[in-house]
Amino acid sequence: MDKDFAVRRRRDLIIAAALAAIAALTPLFVKDVVVQNILILTLMYAGLSQSWNILSGYCGQISLGHALYFGLGAYTTELLFTKFGVLPWFGMLAGGVVSALIAMGLGYPFFRLRGHYFVIATIVIAEIGLLLFHNWEWAGAAMGITIPIRGDSWLKFQFLRTKLPYFYFALALCCLAWFVTWWLENSKWGFWWRAVKDNPEAAESLGVDVFNSKMGAAAVSAFLVAVGGSFYAQFVSYIDPESVMGFQFSLLMALPAVLGGIGTLWGPVLGAAILIPLTELTRFKFGGSGRGVDLIVYGTLIVLISLALPRGLLSLFSRPKKTGAAR
Image 1 (cartoon, rainbow, N blue to C red):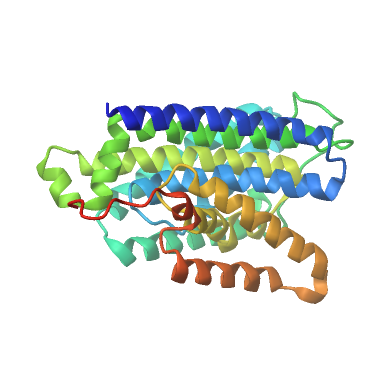
Image 2: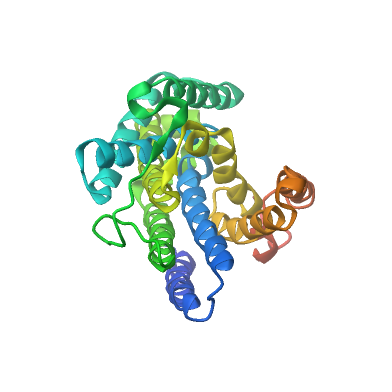
């Protein structure tokens, strides 16, 4: 392993541990419920965007249909809980496994598509899933599912008097997604994904199993996103198709990574730390009278960043390349 690369990986791990420790102490000083809610959503979307980044950033398979896996995680957990009494913790694992299997099942036809055809296919399949749940009576159809409240409990993962447990779970999800990405980045799969992203034909000629590497990236990405969906369902205590499978969820997973730096370790975290508080504060400030203002704000921000910094905000911290070096 290159010495500089090894040093960078150790440095990233130390920085991540320090940031996680600081974040864990934040609730001791932040008592405002609105701010706590924004922090929870920021951590959740940082984890979701990091998970999306595994498939779309590292492997180069741009997906705008990850809301499907988010919704599957939410529905699997809550259907098991409300219909059969299965604890949400087991529902999260079940939702992750179901989503990973469906992602691999969809991968067989979809990974034969290239470029914008693949992107369109992911949007279409997510919309199909949305329509199916809209009309699935057993799952509540358009009325959705109201999660029965049975008192504060870690066992049932329900809390009415405080948001702190949700904050720490969102922090754990964010750290898990980051650590999985950090670990995979230097694994065989990580090198394969970057090769597939840069040039699939050249990668295949060098012995990379292109198809299976895409399938692996899809499974890991879908599993983590589904866990995020399960968490969100417990957090809001009510789900319907639009509230967990709407297209906006796919966008809000992709945009932080695009803003911060797609295909990078810290890009999704940086992007979420800027984008989510900005949109939530805008929505809170304008309320019903400013419906859609948050979309205008982060849409404008993304356009400006795309024009000024195509590689994302993280490129501001990159070391300048030495002139004259052969590339």
